[in-house]
Structures are given as structure tokens and as C-alpha cells.
Image 1: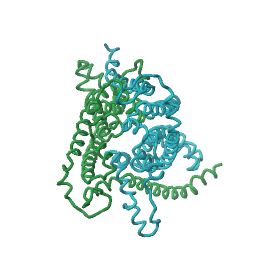
Image 2: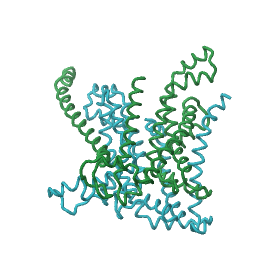
Image 3: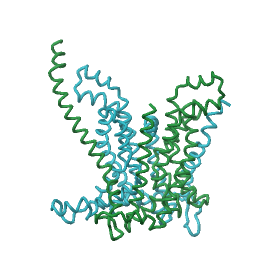
Image 4: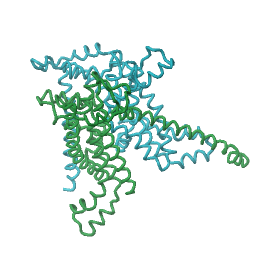
Length: 283
Length: 277
């Protein structure tokens, strides 16, 4: 009985994950090679040409998504690191309050926050109309429907997922290690680049994983803040599945996206282990 | 050698401290700037619930009014969507908390074969983009002829929050002092009694934190929900549908209410856990 205990405890949740996470991926692969339409039904024909066709047709959106994800991730690291650093080392007794403030925006639906940005950035909205009436920007200046708006929205929505793991890594750095470096005549800058920064890199990598992946697959920001020139692969997959009901194309696209990301995700897990991400998630 | 040491210790040290104090202050200003940025759209959301707008497009400030609070139920389908969101979140939270707590206990307490695989699958559930999880779930439901709707949304919500709850409980279980349970057993308590009277009360804060997280994740979710909802509407789905035609002030008010409740619970939980430690 004692030997069975862990298996009995893990069984219900484990089955849930297996049936609704692992099995569906097999079904997605199967759907991608079917042919047919919603009215007459789909037949399994092992039609692999859909992959080539879909990739040729939506190459631009794939590359654009990767590009947006990359830029937004780099900007997020640059914005999040100093903030996580200050909270971890200078936050003092208010550390957990600052952390709570970083997380509180999550209590407003992600869609609603993005819609709020649409209000704020509208051509005649609160930010642009005063600038326009003061003549600081030309009258036809706009932010919505541009690349800047979409990338800005991505950074805004996922920044806490970057701050958190970096903070967790930095908080674990023993201040005595930094003192030791300074005792050994390291300047402030050296103590940072040679001691603190390397120790915090696992947190940065965890943050990169936790932001780059969802940002690249995002379609809400491009859908609300972007224009036709900003369509990402997520928008295509969403439209093909839910509007056009072209399940094989949609499944082929999302299977390709998933495969690309799983390679990255498992390469990360192999190289750095799963603990950094799991620990940050427990916060 | 000693002269170098004293020079290092006295002269430049003071200057460095002065500079670092300025640096810290700048950094603190920067932290607040980012926080303002994070809260800016929320402030706008709250404010525009009080906007005396005439048209359906609620974009420019027209003056203060409380009239929308009285007309909260003007859109029956919006009210229904919010109620759906709450029901889904409650149901998903109950299931997730139950399954996640059991998983967390197993992972925190025992060493067993398959533990690495379980960790890897949980990691994949956290790291996979929602779009991929939603798309593959929809493929499963289409292939097996399951009609998507309320139940499939609950299934999906349990799926993506399960790992978070399991990890949160696991952290608490690992932090337990085993000697307390040993003491209970030495005093003649059975395994069952030890669990309910000793272990469970000690891991309860982790369970509560996990449940809150599951609720917050569920009520806010958009992407997986859109793929698995069929014709069932939730609050975020309704907003997405309304963005093209204009979001009415009622949405701002409902968003504000949900935010207020969330903040109250989070603050309460933080104060409570601070008192405990």
C-alpha cells in the first residue's frame, strides 16, 4: 500500500494531463492529414502535402510571429531585469508588496486590458489627441494598426512572466557572495557582471521561455491593436479553425508551430532542467 | 600592500556609496514608472465605467456619471456570459484543487518511478502556448464527435491550471518538517488522523493559494476558451466579440468589480500568510 500511494495520488491528475494534453496532440497530427469539409465530413487520407502548401502560403506570418516574439522578448528582458534587481536587492521588507503589485493586473482579463490600450492609443484617444492639438505630432499620426502597437501590447501583457523568474533567481543570490566579491576588490560593476549576472541567468532563461513561446503564438494583441499588415500565425490558425473550419490546414499550421516550440521547450528542459520554470510558476 | 587596502577601504568607498545611492533612487523611480505603465490601462478601464458617453463607442471622456451602474443588466447576453465565467471558474477550481493537491502531495512526499516524466508533462503544460493546447483539444473533440460547450471549457481550464496548483502544493509539502508528523504517529495517531489533523492544516495555505490561482487563471482565460467553447459565451469572449462594434461601459464596470474582488482576496491572503510566518 505504501508503495502504491504515490501512484494513486498522481493517477487522477496524471490521467487528466495525459488524456487532454498528450492524446490531443496525436489527434491534431491526424486531423492535419485528413481531407474533406465540414458539411461532408473529413476522411483520413494521410495527405501530407497540406504541410508544404500551408507553410508556403503562410510563410510571412510565421516569420513575422517569430520576429515579433524575438523583439518583444529582448525588450522584456531589458525592461524586467532592472526592476527584478531592484525589488530583490533594494525592496527590503516591502519585497512581497512590490511583487503583488506586479501580479495584480492579472485580475483584469487579458482581453480587457488590451482593449483598454486600444482606447488609450486611439487616433482621437487620451494620449494622441493632446499631442496632436499641441502640434507635437502630425495630425495623421497613429499608433494603432502598427507593428509598434502589437509589440508594445505583447511586452505589456507578458512582462510579469519575465519579472517573476528573474526575481526568483536574484533573490536567491546570497548577499554575502556579493560582499565577498567586493572584499576581493571587485568594483560594483565587476561584482555585478562576474557574480550576480551569471547567477541570475537561469532566471533570465526561464523568463525568455515563459514569454517568447506565448508571445509568438499570441493573436489577441495583433487582433486588437494591429492591422492587416500585422497578422500573426496565431490569427491565421484561429481563423482557419473557428471561422473557415478548414481543420486540416489549421491543424497542420498549429502542429508545425507546436513542433517548433516543443523542440525549443524540451531542449531547454534538457539543458537547464524544469525546476526554474516550475518554481517561478509556484509563486 | 596595506596602504592599498586602506585606500580602497576609505577614500573611494564613500564616493561609490554616494553614487550608488543616486543609482538606487533612479532605479526606484524606474520601478514605479513600470508599475504606472502596468496599471495605466486598468485605471482607464475603471474610469470609463463612469463615463457619460452617448454612443456605444466609449473612447472619449464625456463627463462623470453613475448611470451605468444602474443599467448593469442592459445586455442580457453579457450578464449570461459573466455568470458562465463564474460558474466555469468555480467548477474548474474545485476539480483542479482536488487533483492538483493529490499530485502535489505525491511529488513533494515520495520518490517514485515516473516522477521525472510527470514533472516533464507538467512543465510542458505550463510552457506550451495556449493556442496549441486549445487547437489540439479542439482536434480531439472534433475527431471524437464531442460537442464543444460548457463542459469542454471546464476540462480545458482544469488542464492548464492543474500544474500550477500541483507545483504550489508541492512547494508547501517539501517545506514541511517531518518530525511533526512523526510526533503525531509516536503519540498513537493513525495515518488517516495524522493526515487530517496534522499534515492537511499545514499544507492548507498552499492549497488555498493554488485554488486562488486556478480561479484567477480560469476567469481571465481567453485563448483556450475560444477554441473549446462552441456557442457558450464567457466574459472575455463577449468582450472580444464587442471590440469591433464598441465596448459598452457595462464591461468596464464588470471588469472593475472582478478586479476589486481579486485585489481584496489577494491582499487578504498576503496579510494572512504574513501573520502566519
